[in-house]
Image (cartoon, rainbow, N blue to C red; front, side, top):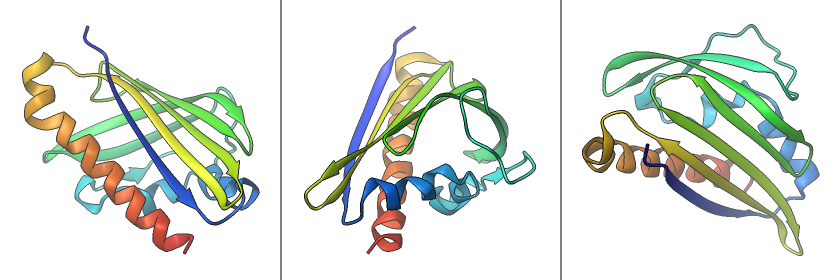
Length: 147
């Protein structure tokens, strides 16, 4: 299984103590996910995020309905958390979120390790571009939200 990595950073002019609570509220996932994914949280809210917390979603990937279950595996407020797909479209999806204090505010980091069914061709044709578009959308929303 070929494991791919995606990483991005975003600087926000707020402290980690101000930024982290936005990410700690699972309802905000719907705000930062692109509308073309038709993303909806199925788990009753509010969701107490902590190690072992489970979140179920529904979305559409290229028009195909998909159910996704995430587990929070690491929870270290206000500096870091990790979520891992238990069920969904990927063979592997592990997403580390980091929030490092800087003199200007917070350096938000995303590091995703993922593997796709269908191999290199499917990754090249669909997934690589989709992942980049999803994180570009998140960046835009977060820059506006924390401007």
